[in-house]
Image (cartoon, rainbow, N blue to C red):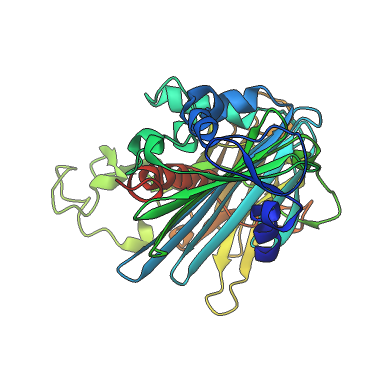
Length: 431
């Protein structure tokens, strides 16, 4: 991949090219009459907010993918990040991804999804097949810009993916550019540098369009690279031949030990809540509620509950999902369960091996037959060992427990956006 990237970056130097001075005059072979950019034109292009506005560029394309890479080495600690966002309006698919390398930690995650029930998720270098039974295509550029506005961001949207040369520590107007052009491929490469950084800009097509922009510090500690591809090079597809992965059900969950149902009958026939028994206070008036044998006190009700929250994205059939109650073996990490219910059943009442009762319920709030936001579950029991157990959901379609190959991708996506915002000010474009 590095070799391929290198060939892309420096193709203008390898192919039959023209070299021009800052006035746009050809000074090194090629023999073409094609117009090459002058240094002044490069400066003007990069200074034009219209050309550098990623949101506007994306709006004008049916198929486009943008990738932003950053690198920072500080006090011996290396941080590398790559953020990817793309769309294919023709196939109605989006492409979002994040890769992080920091010390011994590495994470790479990508999702291709949209108007297809098939969803492709990549973790590391392995692709997985997920599904969304109620598919919807959302332009990721529009979505991210909308989220930025909702959070009080600028109206420009995607500001953190838009290079801002106003914060560069060098003035573009003072730079001398060397430009090479390869006419057959319509590629132009402009390079320049100052005392601390070098900059390379690659254009394609006539009139020129930004393809790559790269900034590197001379000490090798900092780097930024923006890459833009469009047309067929940015076409997206999904496959259904990858290893299946489970649904990722986004839940807000809690467990609670409730009060004992019913009341305690005192020897004088008064009735008090069971929670008042053996509390070192004479609540009955005849002290019969103190010193009660623990075996005579019923178990309190323990409840597991959860709501599918608004972050839930991929809707699957309730009949594909099974609710299980059990515990994980600390050695084998296998989840052992003895109680279960298919969500399609709605509710069941079960008795465990100890004779305790269990009431399990799934509420399909909108009755659409899918696991979707607003749905909820409840598991109630009088079992004294309930606090040692947990609820998990098993996806029969993928034959694995819910959570997908890497739970909580939205968290990583948000993390990436936040970090990139910081990098943009402190690393990518250092003052």
